[in-house]
Structures are given as C-alpha cells and as structure tokens.
Image 1 (cartoon, helix red, strand yellow):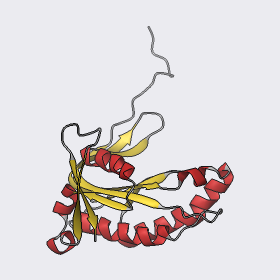
Image 2 (cartoon, rainbow, N blue to C red; image 1 turned 90 degrees about the vertical axis):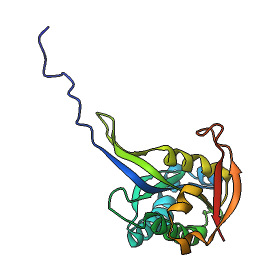
Image 3 (cartoon, rainbow, N blue to C red; image 1 turned 30 degrees about the vertical axis):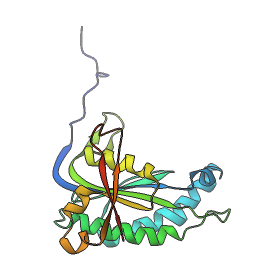
Amino acid sequence: MASTSRERVKAPLYVDRHPEASVLVAEFRNQAALLALSESQQFKFLHDRVYLALDAVAGRHKVYKVQVGPLGFVLSTNVAEADAQHAATLLRCARELLHVVGQVRLPCGQPLGLTMALSSGAITSGLLGTVSLTYQLVGRCVTVAHQLCKADLPLVATRSFRDTLPAAAAAELLPLGRMDLPCCPGEPVELITPM
C-alpha cells in the first residue's frame, strides 16, 4: 500500500522530569452560584475578578500557571523555572491568593470561596496529545493535591509539602490528622494547615 500525504506523523514527545517540585490545586467553593450565571457572565466574571488577579499574584511570586478553568486552577513551582525554595514560594503565593480571592463576591453577592491544596514531590511535566497538545503535570503529589481539594478546607497541605519547607515556615503549619484518598489506598495522607 502506497503512503499518502494524509499519513499521521506523531508529534515529538516533550517531557521533563522534576525530582522535587510543588503544586497548588485550587477549586472554587461556591460552584453552584458560579454555574448559575450564564456562560458569558461566567467568562467575564472569572476573567475580570479572578484570573486577572491570579496572573498578578502568580507574576509577583514567579509561580507557573499550569491550568485555569471555570471551576479552579493549578499552579506549580520548580517546574518551568528553577526555585530551590519552591514550597516556600508556593505557600506565600497561596496565602496571598486566600486574601485576594477570598474577597471576591459573585454578582449575587455570595462569596466565591476558594479551597487550595499544596503538595510536593516528583513531578513529570510535558505535552500530552498529538493533535491538540496540552501542557500537563503528572505525579502522585499532583493527584493527591487534586483529591485533597475535596476536604473543603481553605488551605491544606501534605506532609511532603511541609517537609520541603525551611524550618521557620514549616513551624507555622499545624497537623490536622490523616485522610484516606482514592489515589493512595491503605496509605492515609497526613494533612497540615497554616496557623
């Protein structure tokens, strides 16, 4: 069979492995009120009130914005640019985001609310797909952070995140107990939160 010009050629795979990095996964708490807005209202609200502010905060802290969407976002450190203090950088960013996004109100007057989960560990980053490429982070700590958002706390971190922090910053975090997560059967994840 002769080859045609329509044969698919696989795109080169772009993958980086990061032995130590940190990730922040955030979800909006008041999703019902947000989704009650029309699509155009949601877009304008998220752009004007949330994502412009997120860009400013991420820029100040030199944090990489991996993903944004209608229900939350993902940030990382020590992935796009080297940062030896990646966990401390992300914690400062998270605290500022709690303050900035914590003040955001939906058009109905209700708070948008935010829940954030922080985790550190090995991360693989790269482009997924061959036609419509998407930059993604993959790794146990990324999956753990996504699932920790279901704890519905304003800010929660894993022990691996705390252990990556300098001693003074780690001393400001308090243990909350353990939580079973679907991604870690039989291995409850120790939860930490800022004082």
